[in-house]
Image (cartoon, rainbow, N blue to C red; front, side, top):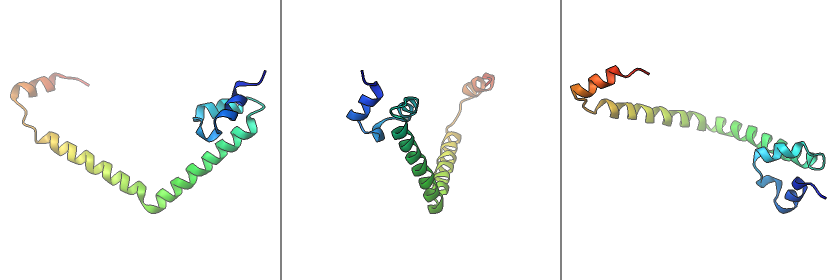
Length: 95
């Protein structure tokens, strides 16, 4: 009887499997070489893409957009009028 993971490889390419399934395949002797190759490929791809994003300034652009969103949201909440009753309720709430 063949292994489930081996059958899975015949039906679905390893690139289409999620990481958890790929890590489980590493434990199976018959699938280990294929799974390790794919995990290494994914790791290299991730590292290379992070380097590209950093060199293009995408990380800084993302951080700037998040900061802008937070600042705008804070400004929006500050502009909402609060009634004295509501203010009293907020003061009694402890976080």
